[in-house]
Length: 318
Image (cartoon, rainbow, N blue to C red):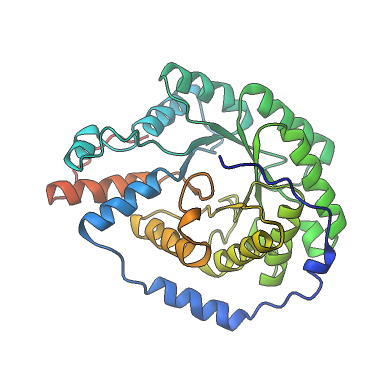
């Protein structure tokens, strides 16, 4: 992770006169969808970059120690070794950025990664994920437990009701206390943008989260009806850029939910490069929250190397 975002005191003046030109944002998003994807070796390079930015995730009610162990093995070996050798990338230490699980599965993930001899961090969702409809005291206790279990990154979720009611002081204080509870663990703040009502609310919630000390802002839990979309991504990244101009502090961006194909991953990478610059194209400042994305990326790399798509038994599944 990059250096921590120390946050700032609450500056309501930064959000008091926010206007988002929705038609222009939507038009820009439609243009993004039409961007030509890269091909050949360039495509393979972008896909390997995407792999290193993935938070490999399992957030299911039927998660068990055994499937978390499989997930951690895949985190360390995201792409088949012979495919990496064919690309001359076998000695570059390519792994995913983190493994993301529920608090109850953090110890399983930490032990599995330790046994595998790798230093991939474990991220835990917390603070009433996914709804956020739990008392603040419970949210803080859950964060502290996840950190105690060994999580080095915490993905909290905000109370959407505070955004919808315009209670910005209360939202700031809630996130600030969550950041304090995280201690040394880096904090990603999930805005659940599909439930915030408008793009101006997305911008305002982004700014408040960063003022309160979030190290990353994240689009979605992956459980909402609408998850990571390009219009929301544009608005959040412009808030990140404005915050950087105002404070000199870089905050990371994480789209999550509905990102399933290699083309999706490359488009998000290109959008980040276009909006924030090349320096954001690293796992310290950009993550992709996904559970099935890695499978499609490995299929595309298999095709690039062999000229054929893999059979069902050719690639390991989580």
